[in-house]
Amino acid sequence: MTGCQNGSYEVKIMKRKILFSKETIDQRVRELADEISQEYEGREILMIGVLKGAFVFLADLIRSLSIPCEIDFTRLASYGAGTVSTENIVVTKKIEMPIKGRDVVIVEDIVDTGLTLTYLINQLKKERPRSLKVCAFIDKKRKRKIPIEADFVGFTIEDGFVVGYGLDVNEKARFLPDVYIIEE
Image (tube, rainbow, N blue to C red):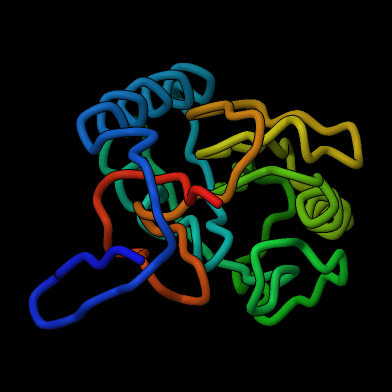
């Protein structure tokens, strides 16, 4: 086990290796913000962050946009306390803002099986947004069970459990500024 310090708070996680540095993440987030700003130039978008993992990514992303946006949040759970999806999706927080007729971008931390994202997209489509796209921080293609693609993707990885930059393992390690892959 290795530990990392953040003030007096220590997080012990399994052996880990850096996957994306803070600098690499910052650069890619700016690039994504430019892509989104160009896509929606002249319009205001509603960005829906999927809690809890996407909150850091969403915060950095909206600060880099050159177009106006509003934000809302939803929370869906499928992992419980483990590192493998249970495939049982539970909505624990619904969006509060109306989306009918609006340009909506779902901001997700990780797309892996596609089950949770597909569920969310289907729920939001019922509200008849003008457009609905997905911006994913990490796309894990190997885990896909439902063929779904994000419209904007920060990083693509084959597999592995990642932590840092808002991503957690059992609610730990979100504070890490870099993204690490946990080595078995």
